[in-house]
Figure 1 (cartoon, one colour):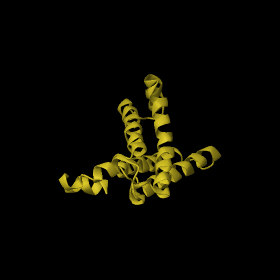
Figure 2 (cartoon, one colour; figure 1 turned 30 degrees about the vertical axis):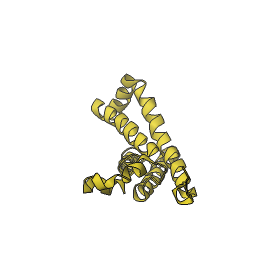
Figure 3 (cartoon, helix red, strand yellow; figure 1 turned 90 degrees about the horizontal axis):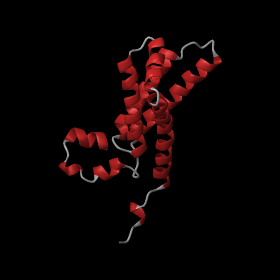
Figure 4 (cartoon, helix red, strand yellow; figure 1 turned 180 degrees about the vertical axis):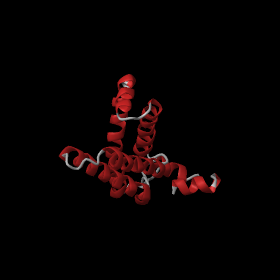
Length: 149
């Protein structure tokens, strides 16, 4: 089978893949860290005034949306969810700007949210499950087609 130049991934698609993998890594790592010791995680969340179900939802969000972004599967939705998560984290937990560490975490969360917003606007690129699914859009419902495009 002959592959023409237009079907090969372009540099932008390789950069999008690298960006997706790097952005998702922080969430997948954090989710793994939280998941390996659930009792300790629940205790940490309790000390912050947060419930056990919220701790489990946080782990699920980071794994689900992190894998979504990494694999390029419903990338726009996964990236949007993680962008909003980062904004919430920054605004709820990192507003003590007298602390250089807190300010750094605030800025980091804003930067990651920005990257996720860009990804949610641009889509995953051609090296993604979304791209494979788009080829079958004529049989999809309009709302699903919109999410994948």
